[in-house]
Length: 402
Image (cartoon, rainbow, N blue to C red; front, side, top):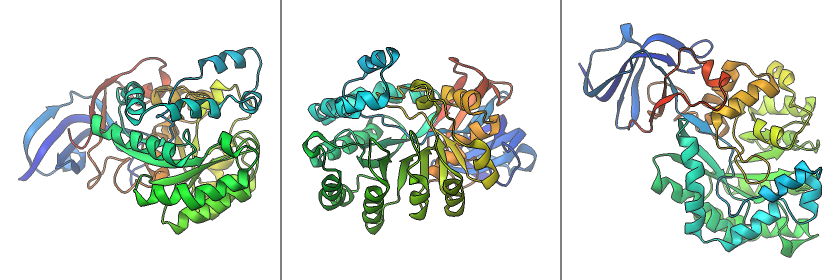
């Protein structure tokens, strides 16, 4: 008899375990957990006898790993609804940014807000994601663009885990845009990040990774490479906003640094795909931004598949280009706009999202030894999670066995 804290029985599992084909489906499954970790996830017929403190009858419901949103900008001040109106009137994202809107308008609001206010304003957005089964979330900085404001934003993101039962990964995105005080001095700002901001972020242990916006309205390939070299020297993994609006070969460069992921990728070329495949860099696709800014060039899905590049999906929740707080809708968009399969969508918000965060060893699949992060669904088949729009069939969310 094996002792455990909790036992979920009479469940159908989509384990996403790589040892099983497809979604790793199990028709009559059992999950046992103790101390927040999975002890067993598999066929009921093969399970040992468990002596559980608490047993839950799932009544045939489906269980997936808890969902993971691996690319968000969830913590910020203000909103950009006015810019949405401008885009509806025909203004481009680039034109708005060059006129002082875009990221810089959010920077002003974020700098003016207190750490406590930033955390409080992010909580409703976090709650919306958690209500759909999200148990791990990545949150980027990049709306401070100064030492004090970047530290404040990262601390505010970390503080969300003090208010909610969720795993928060933080990413330092100081190279998101040029702050007003460095207008026309991109190289000097990168120097400032490398010499002042990044060491302070690392010393306080506030970042799990370092990101950058490698784009014509962001930073060049060479500038990003300098930042990544500094990040790696401090022992921090890297990831990149790459090839969203043009092809600066950022994904190829990031792969050279062993990047966890390259994100957006609408203009990714064959050389970039090959480099990502060699490095094991995950392609994180962000259909919310593609939809919201009305892009027309989709990422090269077929090329990514052929090369065996892992594909993750995320909300890209942010105030300007993807004010989305639904991973379920992101999956539907991924299927509808990018023609991803149901399996690719579900893996993209569980197993591959964990891979994109460097956390696959601890979450993202239903396997013994992983964190007991579960989403229990009132559905008849997993395809419903991708098929429906504006409908949430979550029955229960479990984080660390609770």
